[in-house]
Picture 1 (cartoon, rainbow, N blue to C red):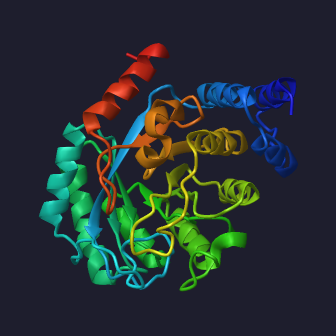
Picture 2 (picture 1 turned 45 degrees about the horizontal axis):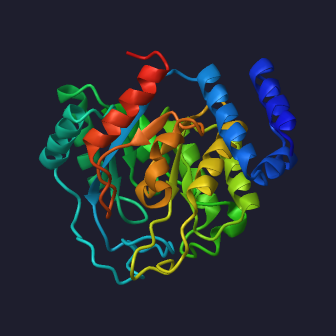
Length: 329
């Protein structure tokens, strides 16, 4: 594809808000190489700037219940099917979750998510999450989110009433590749959980993890599935191979492939928030600040579920520099 073609597609997106990149166009974009990638990233940034606020939002998570998960996701250190060296513990109490939320707000987070291992929570555990949500809403200005596995419609409604705003439930990868990654539940079950969340008034946050062996076509398939589901926010993770998991020997994506992937998601979902989350340090290395040029408008700060994140002050400095360059005080 020539530079001219990249710019032509970009202009169509910018000038006709009903225009949608086709799968064929996305496949052609995925073949970009060399200097064309820089033009591609630049155009992705133009799209982000046209449709979304200039401010970069920051989210953070707490591993509120760790390990012993019955699901066999190939990348996950918390799966009971893997032998990994992680801490395991039951659901934290309201006090601990609230204290962590207050600490992360002071560190610059604007979104706070309670994340739990396992296929789903019991109704009693949901009540604890709801109590923590209400307390966090009272004591902070954070937007409260949850990532609690499968949900029933009643549980989703209870979470919404407690003050939770966003529900996060990753599809992880394309449906055509899902059986290579997980065999203990179906793709349809994940989609039903997202639909239960949105039906209750929660905003759906769903994305995946890249670099787990999927093809470019399957990355594009995932991006289009998320578009069809009309999710509010797309978190993009990159694989950090964890010893003891099935993917411990998987080769990581190169930085340019990772950035090109972000840009593809932006072209396919021009008006959707894109957050860069786990694995960015391992995959992007010295190119982390390029995520914003590639189309991201949010970033996860602090630690992840079982691995450490980058120093928060380094991330805040990175965000401040980008925002000053784009006229945000």
